[in-house]
Amino acid sequence: MTRASLPAHLIRLRDLSVQDLDLVLERARSLKQNPMSGELAALTVGLLFFRGSLRTRISLEVAMHQLGGDTIELTASSDFWDLEVRQGAVMDGRPPEHIRDAAAVLSRYVDALAVRPSTPGRSWELDRRDDEIHTWAKYATVPVINMESALWHPLQALADRSTLREELGDLAGKRLAIVWVHSPEPASLAVPHSLLDIAVRDRMDVRVAHPPGFELDPGVVSMADETAKENGCEVRYGLSLEEAVDGAHVVYARSWQSLSAYGNPTLEASRRSRYTDWKVDDRLLDLSADARFMHAMPIRRNIEVTDDVLDGDKSLVYEQAENRLHTQKALLLHLLSR
Image 1 (cartoon, rainbow, N blue to C red):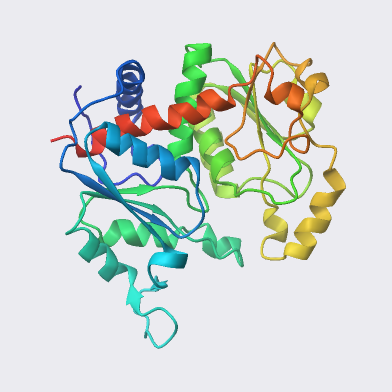
Image 2: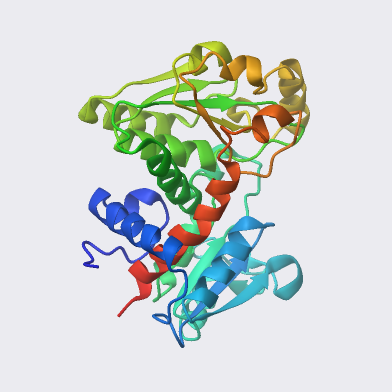
């Protein structure tokens, strides 16, 4: 496999060119058939979690094991202390160490760092800057992989692209519905942002359904619209569930936060409670073009999506989850093979 324009870090999927993405997915398809490889023997990836994880943690650990390497997992709540992120900070507060020092030291122990940073949740203008993951990348001397920041989830998007291509082949001209669904505890916007970005890069027509007040980040929307214009595809926002799903080839459900109520959980919960009927069921899918159903998980059954849809023959959620393993193995090889 040849490697072109190899990025130093993977903060968002745009750090990989379309050519590199194709190479990674080609390798992932091969690894899906022949999973074991010793190409990363004696290499170690440090996994740093400042928030919880299930699929990301396990899939990366298994990926390195199957490639002959190792992982070291550290969880902030139990394994180490708070880290300062502010540049030029006078460190007289709680954190005893700066990320720049932790990044420099850990780079001398491991061959790559995968980080799931914290998201304070008080100000979207601050959180959307993704200062923590960018600081790790600035001061690490090994590749840094973003395991989901406030703005981006490149590992999920990589698996989603693989799943979409397995099911639909060439994605140009295919229609993707990204639909907001109700959940008592919504997820971040990183998944819909990353999905929208990769979809327009692959020339898909995208329909985004969400209630008022649950718009996506304006900067991400602007970038997606510009890419869609360049690629001759179309994105529409603020649709009803029925409008978005009509004619769709894939329906991708996700609950996400209200940016206009960000940092105000009482207001956000009140606003969210008005839309408890926003879920995916058989009636909704019947409006589509025989659409497949996708979701990044975890899923609240019969709140976000009914059992009939989730367990039906159009559901791809387990294939998505499995493809996290294969695509991440291919990515690790792309970043670390010598």
